[in-house]
Image 1 (tube, rainbow, N blue to C red):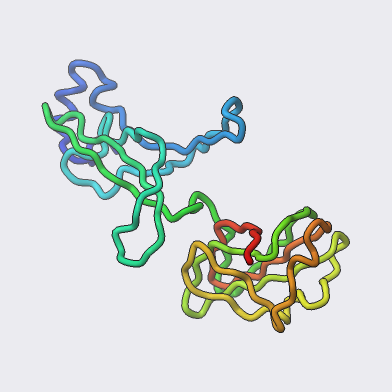
Image 2 (tube, rainbow, N blue to C red):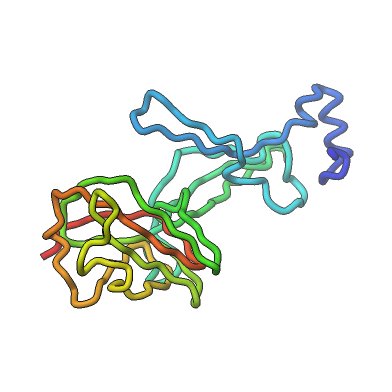
Length: 212
């Protein structure tokens, strides 16, 4: 209902010049590409205009520019984050505003499970490295556990689910641990699957790396 939005009289005035000026509203969508040639766009809003207030929910309210920038976190000791900068409030006259939106590193999408739990098994793949690092967020009572399987889906000795303690917290880089600290490098170059078991948790990304 357009008339219920803020500054209805101003919208009507702008519509008298052009209906689009008074009725168009700007959202920010997400579009990405793996090769710079073919793109996928999601039609769900990536950034919504936010709570209704003066100079909001209007034409040009939210133009995201300069793509995405990795910036320092304003919280002391917290890891870097992703910043998006959007111009807004174009119909306020000479002035405009720039608003910063933030997202955790690799926070565009996650595997998410409720408290009753959920799990996923990856497709078979090969890796290099000797550590598996996760970017995740859980509640205090939530957790993530990890099992490594062979290409046929059979749990690998020393890397079974019962060997993995519950990992919990909110971190962009936590090394997965199994009981007795088995050497993950012994599986490098072999075809494996990963089974993730989540409880009130979001898993954002994973990476294998080599450490001394």
